[in-house]
Amino acid sequence: MKTADENNVRWTIFVPKDTDLTLRTHLAQAGLKKGSLSKFVADAVAWRLFDLNVAAAQAHNQAVPSREIEDEIEQALDEVRRERFAKST
Image (cartoon, rainbow, N blue to C red; front, side, top):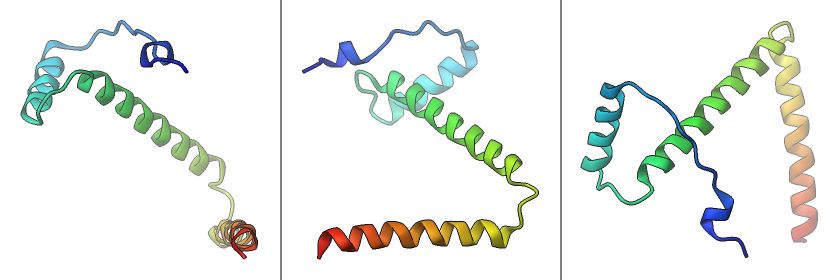
């Protein structure tokens, strides 16, 4: 089994001092714990990547009629529901 250190990498990043102070103040007010800064940064990166992926998907599908997208979503949901209910019965 891997330890937490084996699953992590060390980053060296530079941010403006006011950003550092604001974030550390926020974390301290929220009950700063060991690893809070790293977790905050990892969460922020994950959310930003998600946001970029959503924007890319929206741009890619801009010319596709919304009804067609909704139909595809419904079809995918129906398939997942059939698989899930088939396993539970």
